[in-house]
Amino acid sequence: MGLFSKDMKTFDDLFVHTLRDIYYAENQILKALPTMIDKATDPTLKQGFEKHFKETQGQVQRLEKVFQLHGVEVSGVTCPAIDGIIEEAKEVADKNVLDAALIAASQAVEHYEITRYGTLVAWAELLGRKDCAALLRQNLEEEKATDEKLTSLAERSLNRKAA
Ligand code: FE
Ligand code: FE
Ligand code: FE
Image (cartoon, rainbow, N blue to C red; front, top):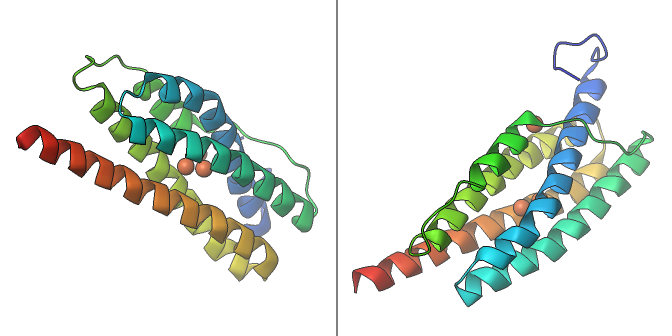
């Protein structure tokens, strides 16, 4: 469903559409993460991906709860942005720079999620859905923490290579 389709008349429709966008995105991320876990060579990076895989499963459940609280059907709408980001992540990198490529690709994913959840938290509050906002904020915080961990991993390995 496109943003300008006539199915989207109200602010509430826009909120639900964006919820379905991130629901689709989280499910695509769940499909992509096992390959990233597999490919990562640095044990800390591998563990980080494993941890975020479990977190992502919990995020999907929180989103399902948000749909339920808001009284709408649990469903996804294709998000071309996450499809593109994941597609790009599949570009092959030499084993020397593989972890760096994986970190960069996953930070693109986290940043997409952060923009979506940031918007959704604000909109849930505007709609008077503090219950939904609280759940969405938990997802937002997990994405931010993951992004920060990826940054420090990237810096650590760059420093190691420079030494
Ligand atoms: Fe997520
Ligand atoms: Fe999207
Ligand atoms: Fe994430």
